[in-house]
Length: 269
Image (cartoon, rainbow, N blue to C red; front, side):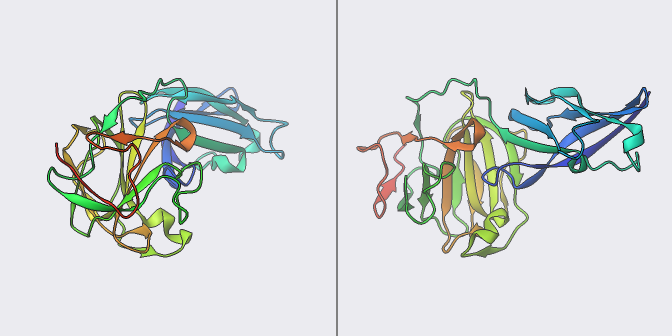
């Protein structure tokens, strides 16, 4: 049996990664090509696979699965070798529609957890936009986001213990339209209850952590910047549950649950 290993591009929802990779193993058995999908990320991925109308009469697929770190969905797609023009280079998008999103839908979220403000103790910042902000916090994936008025070069800290599962820090681009949404540098951290914190608009080469790092609350993780879809420097912080749905979250030592736009908040502890 011949084994090959490579990557496919995974079109995850825009509020996750844009275009990112999931590992794929290609096997040849019984005059067919078998594709196995492997999750290389530290966060679970829920995937769904659908045969295209043009291929559904001859390929076999598994409808989907929840893959944890390094889990494999074996024989996710089976294609007759006679239907593959070049078996050395297979583009799965010619045969299937592939969708994926981070998070485990079976996770039980700790709704009582109080987070720590995302900057060093003693620092204070103005809230630019809070939950339900009209400019850009008005969709399911952004409704419960908060924009802190950090400046380029300021230190960003972890709001909760977790493991880093994605880092992007290669961009120095920004613009005032959504065409730059994929240009934002970011760090994503998975928490023990399955929630995921996204820290966005970081500086070029501004990550202070690597994928796989375990971080503690209050630990420096990044340098604030001005990248992606933005009009001013700031930190965009949002928490997700599975399927890219933003969720409300609250901070320690605050008199009101929701941070109010225009007000300054100091991290005391």
